[in-house]
Image (cartoon, rainbow, N blue to C red; front, top):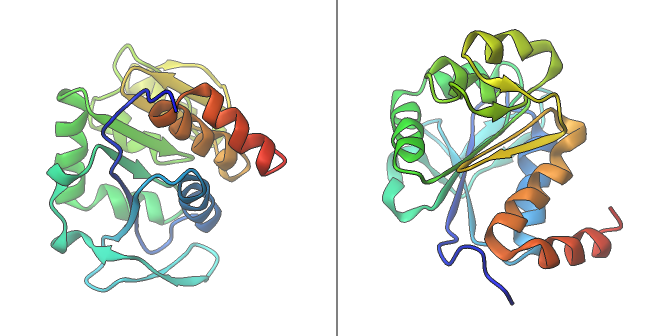
Length: 189
């Protein structure tokens, strides 16, 4: 296996009101690629209720993790999941730190707006849910309108319908394009 990145610990953050397909499909694809992904609730408990009232349980809570143990932070979108993530100071401060340190951050749907509001997308190529393009433009991002955009250590994607290519872009980052293509073929994508 031709590894693009030897550091592969991934934290996927979940807030009440998250878009469940963006969160769970991403976690599923990463697990199929044998990448270690931890689903982290920003709630006091591991239980999360999605934007469409699907209840599921995360692996742990944000208060119990060591951010330095992770190589990538993933932010799924959804409403009110995205503002709930953005309201978590511990998460946002670590997202800022990761981007500034050149560590990987990935966000889908409305969640790239968290990066824009934090000033992390200035002069960076990015995409998000079409209904939130203005947030990226106001954040001085170079809006691509692509399904998935990779710019250095930031991966962004548009919405629930792009969750699979979003997850495959993350697989490609960690394992290379050949492994991502094999997985895409295996899941008949």
